[in-house]
Amino acid sequence: MSERSLEKRDKPLLSCRGLWKVYGGARKRSNFSFKTSDLDALRATGAEAAVCDASLDLQRGEILVVMGLSGSGKSTLIRCLSRLVEPSHGTVVFEGKDFLQASRAETIAIRRHRMGMVFQHFALLPHRTVLENVAFPLEMQGVRREQRFARARETIALVGLAERENYYPRSLSGGQQQRVGIARSLVVQPELWFLDEPFSALDPLIRREMQDEFLKLQSRLKKSILFVTHDFDEAIRLADRIILMNEGRIVQTGTPEEIVLSPKTAYVREFTRDVAREKVISVRSVMERGSKAVGKGASVSQDVTLANVAAQVLSSEQPCTVVDAQGRAVGSLSRTALLKVMFA
Image 1 (cartoon, one colour):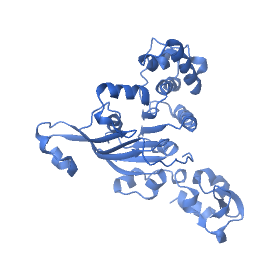
Image 2: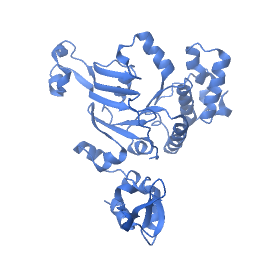
Image 3: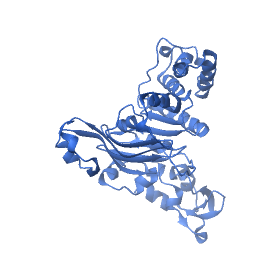
Image 4: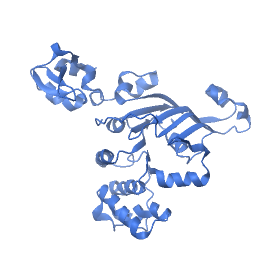
């Protein structure tokens, strides 16, 4: 996972409270109280909850990854937050305003100007070039041709496809097509970015490359992102925080390290059982602390994961010195402590 620090804000960019999406049983469930969160009572009406009593906050500049098995409700959740699907109950607040009270015209305007969306299927227009595909959202906004093409060229260069702007989608690889989809969603310069399994259809090597490119983009653009995936390794690489869902409910929210080290339910514990712990756990969590514990080996940062320093620690005859962000020695990390985590 990248070492990104979040700027603390008083108010999140996007939040929801008590959000539900229920299908079926329309007549019988009129008497159902959403405040009870009783799924058995809801199912007795012939209805099913795709999202059940969900609450979350997305901070500005944060990558919040939504995880869960197939059918857990993660995609439905972000569609409710963007109002591609209308929630059955609850509140959604975007930039301090009740998004669910926005009119249809206001909702469309917000999606066109303030939100970007990327999905698993690229949905590129086959009869349009890369440049025309990327400029398409601006065309829908009524932006003049010269202006929209100029901004599209800037965005295409940002995703590394400057030499492909006159190509058609059929001439591009899967990874290149996904870059076009990303550029198309970024060209409107959104405040909020929804990405639903954007890399899952790609081959493993291309998927890794796209994750790298995504992190480079985020380091420059500092977008507020809701990212859906079922791949824990992908979540670990990308997330500032993770939301884990099961049967429509949010069962735990936290940093990757918090979720792996302190699972709140048996489901979370099982879900994270096979995670490579050294990729998640930071040096600070396992180091021996205090000035008397300072090692004699080479120095390592307390803020990086164990995977980043494993080779260095294992090759050192002495425990490595752990330093903070200011370079001050705050403890040590030994081979033994590292191996205990790696092979726990």
